[in-house]
Image 1: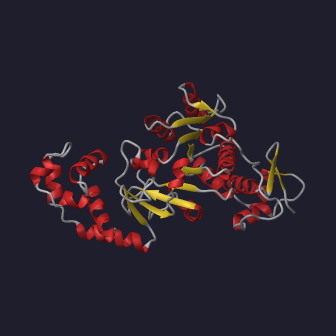
Image 2: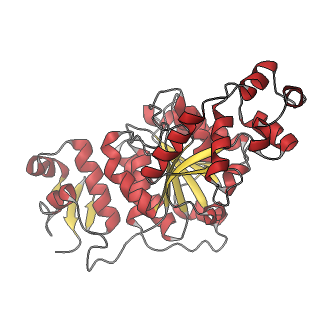
Image 3: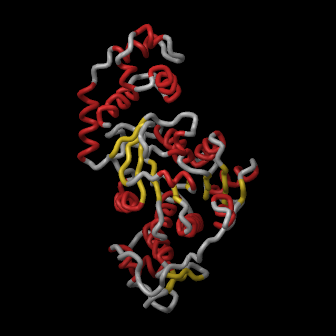
Length: 367
């Protein structure tokens, strides 16, 4: 298997060879190995293969770097999967331009093809957006829906955390090499995702998180899923790119409406005007993904912690009691930033150990 991966990686490394050309080459030669053993004339007989591409395939000599890539991936616990691999995601194979190979940390599972939802939105999300994304994903993950997102700040982070708090499965798609965690602050979250799902990327190891990578990444987020949910997005948000890919791939697009005077809502409200399905409760999505439509209460067992609290969570939890405490008091007591404490409070809510009251007041649900 490792020998075959060498040829897949080599094929991917050829300048000008995209998914469409790879498909043409494989239809003609059947295996990547035979592509590299073929004559110049037979290569030029393949649709989409230019003289430059044919010569690059014939002259390819960079096997040393290919072997280093495979060795490095193995030492980091990263698997490399090609189209012919049993564990290559089925949903990805069905898009127009699937990556010839993906890198994966964690467990790939083709049961995801039956019920996977992409959840995307603003990086600088409001507390409303974070709460909605986290609660939707918690409740959907509880029913067995796999949550797919991009590990970015904001909505992506809330989506992954919601799925994890439910004990569910979640997949993070990176816009860089899988050996790099971006943003770095989500390193702990990434480790949890690898234990309860998978982190994947199509870029070679060491690829930095450059801006140009993220539109390509977004097509995989939608491609892995049956549908896409957009929670808060400005008019120029990358989330709208994901929604467009979803439509091109024949996926349903859902959108949660936002305030009409909020910049963060303009993109998502525009999607609704253009035909995205407005949703205001998880059941709206679940009835499409699962005809039974059964969804549990968002609460978890309130008698004990389902997972141990980390240092930040424990710090905030210890500031609370049975009497409501406002978020400003919590910031003063914990000496944490607004964004940090909002993220921690959301996680504690999803775990069922903290309750939010009107006016951003909080109490413990267990004492």
